[in-house]
Each structure stands twice: as structure tokens, then as C-alpha cells.
Length: 130
Image (cartoon, rainbow, N blue to C red; front, side):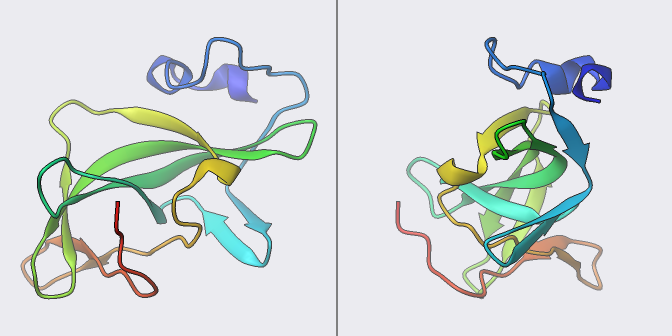
């Protein structure tokens, strides 16, 4: 149950978040798109750079009205200018709560690991213009 979430994840939720009837899930399919823990979504473009902020799906929440939301662990995606983004942890671990309907890009992305043990993401479907 959401009340058993660690404090740092609870802090990401809005103060008026209603826990009544909320389920935590490992995966969910919304409009034929499957979301699961460990996949990434684009959250924003970093100011004055071509880098992106990604959110790793940590927790999926389904409320009593069937609204889907996510608790996401933020990571910085450094643009390689070779078609991929190298993921880096943000200095201070930060979680963010986002409603599915507010995602700027609905397609979740897997990360892959290079021979140099870098975790990377390739945008397979879009270019982010923000």
C-alpha cells in the first residue's frame, strides 16, 4: 500500500494526495502502452543545454478513479550527439510524482549498458523539442 512507501517517495506526492483506494503496481498497460518499473520517461529538457531529464519508473500508482500516476527517480541524460543519452545520477536523489496524463512523452524507454558500463537511452520515436 502507498502508506508503506519510504519517506523520500512520500515527499514526492502532493500534500493533498488521496490514498483511499490507491494500489501500487509493478506494471500497467495504458492505451496499449506498457509501463513497468525500471523503464524511463522523458520529463524535461535541461535549461540552456541539449541534455534531458529522465524519470526512472520506481512506483506505479492506480487510484480509485483509475487514474495512473508514477513516482519517478530523476536522472540526467547527457546528450552524446551520437544518437543516445548517457544517464547520470543527479547529485541529490530526487523523486517526482507525475500523472500519466501530464507526461510530455507517453512512450517508456529501456536503458541499455555499454561495454564501458555506461547506462544509456536512445530516443526511438521522437525528438524532444521543448
